[in-house]
Amino acid sequence: MLFFIAQMEPNAIDIVNKVESFYQSSFTMLVAVLTIGLVIVGIVIPLVINRFQIRSFDRAEKRLRDEIKELESKVAVGIHKSAGDTFFMQAGGFFKVQTYEMALCSSLKAIEMYARANDLTFLNSALEMAENTVEKVEGGNKFLALFKSLFNLAKKACEEENLRDQYTNRLDEIRNKISCKKGQGD
Image (cartoon, rainbow, N blue to C red; front, top):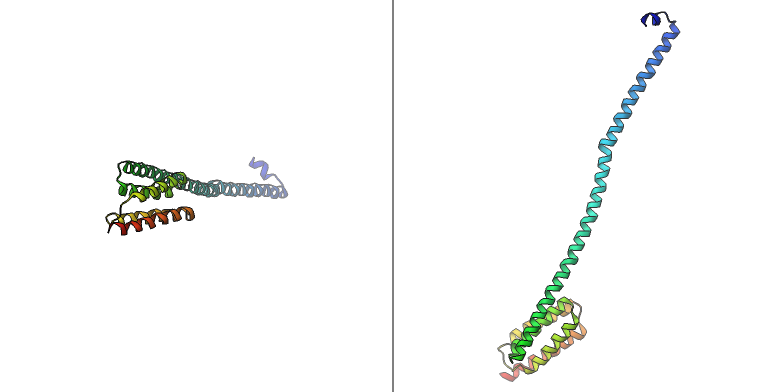
């Protein structure tokens, strides 16, 4: 083959050099394109995928946080409702055995718990129990501080749960009756 190349005309050698130069530059270009392609596939695409995964994770995390808050709220309502039921039943038991001071304490605590659970049906029942019980409480200072403290907690719970008007008015009436009882036993 060297013999064949040596016998070529000078013009032919130029053509061979040009063809060799073309293939060499084409091969260099191919290597460059493959290198750039590998960089894109090996670095850029994983970065883009990572970015989408982070966004997806952030959305999922926010959704889970919202669900947790919702569940915490439902659990808190359930706890308050259960506590309200317990105090209401306790108030009924104290009322039956004519321990009216303890019945009033339990019914005021039930009002607070039902207000926090936003359970209006049982809140009305607990208010009725407190209204009926306060009539039977004898005067005196023995339980007055406790009544006022429990009353304030019940009223605060009603106000926090935006149950102001009708419920707080009834609580104010109970407070007034408690205050009137103070003077009777002294």
